[in-house]
Image (tube, rainbow, N blue to C red):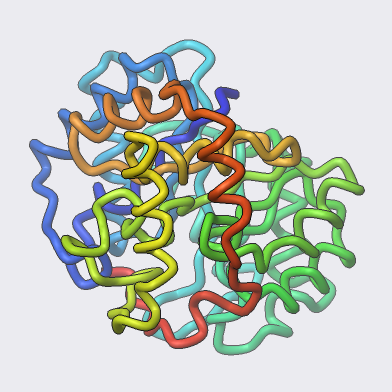
Length: 308
């Protein structure tokens, strides 16, 4: 897979999370741009936009005449969003819903998603629970690789030690602002798990700018919280760089990361991502950026999760 993966949560039309709407036409145009970009990896999930993300990905695949050869789809098993149930039966239903929306009979990568938000964690972890069902899906050939995608670091590390995952997705926890994913990355790398690092822009602020988007990891940020962002912006301005290019390449230059997941919601963002990925960054800029302090606490401790 390519070192960039395009995330499609925003294409599911999630204005309560991202602050803007995305129409079906815009989603289709964006996905077509992805298919033509040279990037061969997209990530979605059962609950993004309450299923709209997967449905729009499926529509785009059909409009394209099928999935491009060698293309990798990653999706995720999700809890029932009304009851929070996440047992083996729900996991199986989640995959069936995803395959139907996507219009495929299997996926290359399948993650169990956000167990920390389930109603009862033991439904997932007990013998015969959702986690065992995930590995059964791999045995049945419904997924080539299975993994864990979640946020809460301490619980994630515990679960990683209990199951032989192929992959993980960590989000917002390895950025220019926050390195709280270090223990997760160290353990996953030691076990040969492929690490996918999502949200290197800290929810968008490092791409759009603190003046335009005064939020960090999807939550409003005050002047104190935005001060580290503005330090990054000042260094980048001194060197004639887009902060988004520095944020993206910070993730891409980490050798433990197999692919960096970048959410896109319009074709221009696809092109911009590729430009930022190849933008020259002088060593002096890296030295200044790496000298900045960074947070190691949970960046989403105060986030109110909403799939819409």
